Length: 113
Image (cartoon, rainbow, N blue to C red; front, side, top):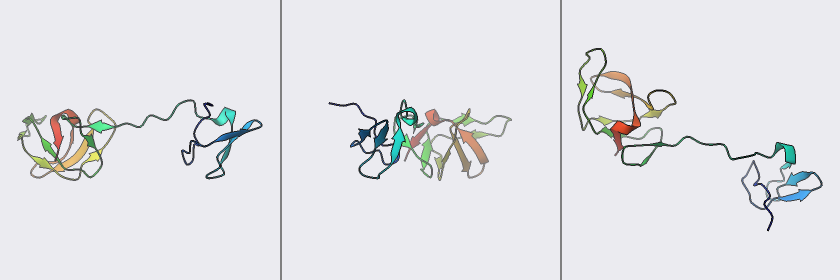
């Protein structure tokens, strides 16, 4: 059994080698062995405190009282946060919370609804 790479365009497993090139019979994409990806790109997956996968636009609930920096108050446990946006950085979620405004949250303190 051969270990040819999957097509980088359509991810088809039915590739074949033609000379020094790889060919995909499904989308007709051709690429050289030097262009073949060494490993699949890692896609960041954000998970909530319960291990559920989060996506942009999800609604989450805060599972712990969170004190805001600067003496701005406390986001209470059970607060529902709608339409989250996932980002890379020190906080994983950008969102707006009614009564508090825009802020960043960490995924370890939320649960998907």
